[in-house]
Amino acid sequence: MLILKNRGINFSIRIKQNLLVESSKGKQIYSRKFFMNLQPNQTRCIKTTKIVYGIELFVAASRSIDGKLVIIATTYQAENALNRYKLRWGLKPYLAF
Image (cartoon, rainbow, N blue to C red; front, top):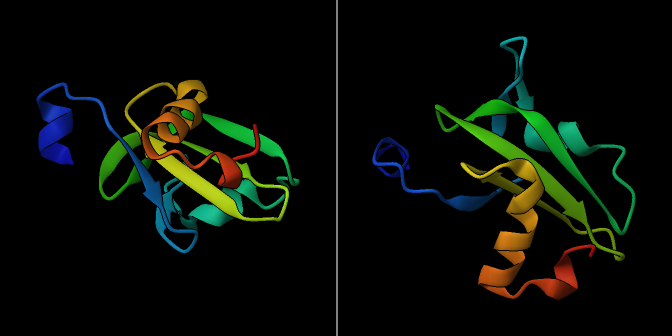
């Protein structure tokens, strides 16, 4: 991923809920903690970048009606990440849109 970012190639990846992400205060936090209060059929985009796998990335998530949480880390602006991911993988049933 670092090679992609260094070459200016944008990407989005789904990350696991138990992945440790560095917060703005430098603390390691499970990715799901950023979205604990996310209700079914809602999305949330974190406006500031977080450190994911050692790379500064935007993070966004969506919770489906049945409660499944999808978390995306991306080089794109967070607002666009979920739509791009949904289009790419056809996960409409899992994303709350």
